[in-house]
Amino acid sequence: MDTIRLGYVGCGFMAQKVHLPNFSSLPGCKVVALAEVREDLGRRVQKRFEIETCYRHHLDMAENSEIDAFAVSAHFAAQGEIAGDLLRTGRPVFMEKPMAVSVIQAEAILDAAKTPGARLMLGYMKRYDAGNELVKATLDQFRSSGEAGPIVYARAHGFCGDWICGLDTPMETSDEPMPEAETIRPAWLPEAYAGPYISYLQQYAHNVNLLRFFLDAGDRVRVRTVDLDEDGYTGIVSFDMDGVRGVLESGRLDHHRWDEHTQVYFQNGWVKTWAPPLLHKNLPAEVEIYRGGDEHSYARPIPRDRWSWAYHREAEHFIACVRNGDPFRSSGEDTLTDVRLFEDIYRIFLEQQGVL
Image (tube, rainbow, N blue to C red; front, side, top):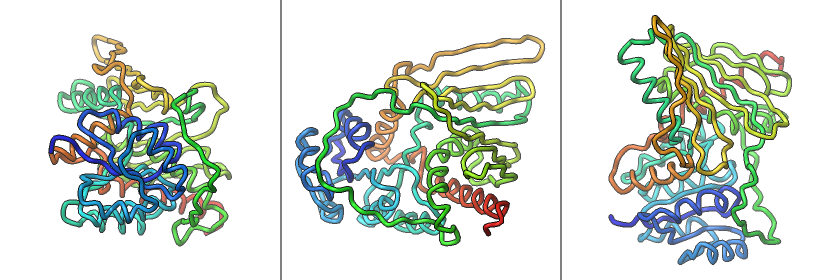
C-alpha cells in the first residue's frame, strides 16, 4: 500500500485549520474524498484542497471501496456515531477527541471497532509531541535504572489561555446554517450540567490522557478526591494512577499565552514539560530534567525533532500505522479509561453539590 487514500468527514475549524492541511501535506497520503452536509461549504473546501469527490453524507462516502481509511472531526455529539458507521465498513478511523461523553457511548463505538479490518485512533496529539516523547523516554530511563528513586508524585496543570495564537491558515465559509446536533450527555447527568461537563471533558481529557501515558498507568487509574468550584471547572482532582498520586489542576485565565505543564517527581529528581499553545505550529513542548542525589544536574534538552508540530506528527503516525499495521499510540480501547474517569469526577462533584 504505497499511498493511503483517505476519506475525511467534516469541514469545520479543526478540519480546515489543522487536519486537512496536515493529511494533505503527507507524501504517503492522498485525501480523495470529503463528506460535508453543508453542500456549498463542502464544494469550497473540496476545491481548496483539490479533493476528487465530495459527498453530502458520510454513509455515501463509506460505500467507496477505494478509500483505505477515514478521518473525522465533527461536533462531539455527532462524530461518535459517524466514527462507528465508518468503523463498521472494516477500515481504520481517526477521530478527534473526546471519543464519547459516556462509557455507554464509548463502548458502542468500540464494538464497531471490532469489525474485521477496523481500528480506531483518537486525536490525543500531545502523545506525539516531540518534547513529550523526550519526557516519556527520560521517565522510562529513570524508572528502569532506578537512578532517581521511585516516583512520588505527578501533576498536570492547565489554566489555558490563547490556544489559536493568530493561526492564519485560510478557512472557507458559507452562509449555510450549522448542522443541528442533538445534545448528548450521560443518562445520569442533569441537563443543566451538560454544558459544564462537556467543557471540562473536552479541555482536560488531554491532560489526564497524557499523565496516564507518562506513567504507563493504562486503565489502572481511579479518582481519589474531587475539589471543584461551583462552576464545575476550576479546582483540583486527585487520582491513584497505578499506585502514584496524580493531580489535575484546572482553571481559566485571560492569558496572552498558554499556561499548561506536566511534571513527574521522583525521590531524587523530576521531569517536566511545558506545553506550547495548541495551534502554535512547529513548536514542541519544552523539557526540564533535574537529577538530584550526590551530584545535582539541571538540563533543558532540545527535542530531536526540534521544529515540529504535534498535530502534524499525529497525522504522520496514523498514516504510518495504517500502512504498516502497527498499533496506534492513542487507541480507542485506551481512551475508554479517560471517559470513565471523567464520568466518575462529575458524579462525585454533583454528589458533593447535593444534586445527585
